Structure formats: structure tokens, C-alpha cells
Image (cartoon, rainbow, N blue to C red; front, top):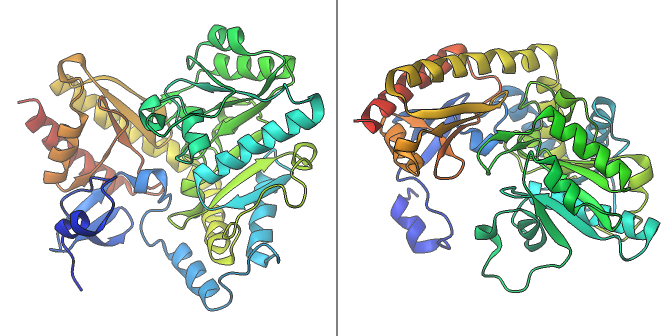
Length: 400
């Protein structure tokens, strides 16, 4: 059965506004729609498709596991989950792993763990959560309220208590809020939905020091910045500052729903049997794909390639900007790149996105003023060149 975009409006809850074309097939960084039209994909499924579409290693892992074992529940363990947990522990600061299905679930688990551990260690008063303005941590009610963007959390009734917000990259603002009743501080090393804004090294180091001073847990939300996106397996490794709890999703599954929370042995013990759970988290299918993803991504050639490919993107964007003066800033880390529109074009990111589609190019927004690129980590240099040529044609039409 073939469906059209109009069928979305007939059958689906109207909380999304998808593009007019319907993709039906993907390979690498190329996508084809129902009419056979080909697009270069620089969205990566919003930083999810870390190896592009239908990468052979992920297809093989999924097919192989699909003929063995799909689901057990967490009344039992399974080999792919244990393999993936071991790889994550070996590759990071963590001593323990919790698997789930999404970034929101990973952040929900992290926040619950931080609060529970703080309360058990210091008493009921130590429950305050501090979060950055313009942050985004998921769509569960708790995580959307922790995220510092009221447009996503307003309109759903009373919000959870004990959440306060500080200005990102402003250490003095955090210092004014943090105290001995603070359970945790949660930050994105790169604010994704907030405009692709990287933290400064001084800010990250200062947050760590403040958390240590007040016995508060530091949570890094690496849902968008993790799984090789910055050119290190996780962005905290770029900064040289270690969190107490880290959340990962999106890219870690390469397109298959997978999330996880990483933490230390000592903190993990506060989630005893029965305190938290998930039906599908750690299922063999997801973890088999996650294993294959890590085996490819967590290698010197791929991680170094991320930084080399970033340089190609930035050079092309700067060259376009020299001709059209469309961007005020090009920023980000690795292959999470944000191009902020100049004041003359403020608020028109959607218009540029739509013009890119006309040039057979898929790109993203990060708010009304920022174009976001989150392509495959293994996108070819040829695809980058073709994508930037298409993007320049879109920019030329945009600036007329």
C-alpha cells in the first residue's frame, strides 16, 4: 500500500509537521522518495543515524540477532546486552550501565538516580535539580520540565518542584544557585536543540568544581553529542572533565531505538532491585545493533575522520558565507554543526530548510535562527561536496 503525505494529516496525531515528500529507501548518506528522487541527508535522523542508512555492519547484526532472540524482559539477562555494557565500561569512566530505549528515558533514569542517591546520602532536603536555560533533556514530563525551554513544558499543568535554571556558559549564574541542597546539575556539553552551542572548557571545569564543593552529582546529557559525534566517543573526553552520570542515546543505536545511562559503581548501588526499570531496555535486538555500531565508530580511523570531515563542512560554509553573508556564526564540535543566521535573516531558518529540500538536500533547524547539520559520521567527502553545492544553491535562492 502506498501512502501520501496527506494520509499523515488523516491518521496521525498532529504534533508533527513532516516534509511533503515521503522517503522510502536510504543507503549511506543518500535517501530516495516515493518518486525515486534522490536527496543527500545531512540530518542523520537528528544525530541518530551515526553510520548513515543501512550500514552493512548494522544490517548484518540486526539480521543475525533477529533470527536468534528478540525479547526476554529484564527478568533475564542476555548476551548482546552484556557485551555492550562491557564495551561501554571499557571505553568510558563508567563502572555500571543501565539500558533503555531513548534519550528521555536515559535522562529520566539519571535524574531519578541522582535524586535518590543524594537523598539517601544526605537527607530529604537534598533534591534540587539545576539545569541550563535553553537546554533540552527529553519529552517525559519530568525531563521536559528539567529542560530550560518553557515552550515545551508549559500547558500541561503543575510542574515538578525543585528545579531551577542558570544561564549556559555563565559560571557565576550557576554559583548563585547551587547550594548544599542541590542533588545534581545536568548540562549538555553542546546544547543541541538550544542552537548547537558548545560549552567552554572553563565553564565545564567550573561546573565540575562547584558540584564537588557542594556534593552534587554532575550529569552530562550526551544524547546528541555522544557516540562519536564530536570526534571522541563522548564529548566529556574532549573537555577532560568526567561527570558522575552520563546519558547516551540517538547515535548509540545507529537508528535502532537504544538509550543508556552510565555511572560509577558507587553511585549505581542506589538503584537497588525494584527502584527503576523498563520493559524493552537492553533487549537483544537493540544491543546487537549497538555493539556493531561501537565496533565501527570507536576506532581511530572513524573518530579522526569526524574531525577531518568537520573541517570540510566548515570550510564550505565559510566559503558560502563569504559570498552571501548569510551567517553570523558557524559553531559546534565534530559533526554537530550549527550555522546561525545573520540578523538580516533572523527567524527564517525554516525558509532556508524548505529551499534546501527543493535542491534535494535534507538539513535541520535548531530553533528559528540556526541551521543544524548532523550527518553520518562516515559520510564520504564526495557526498559532503555535493551537499554543499546543493546548499549553496539554496542559500543563493534564500538571499535573493
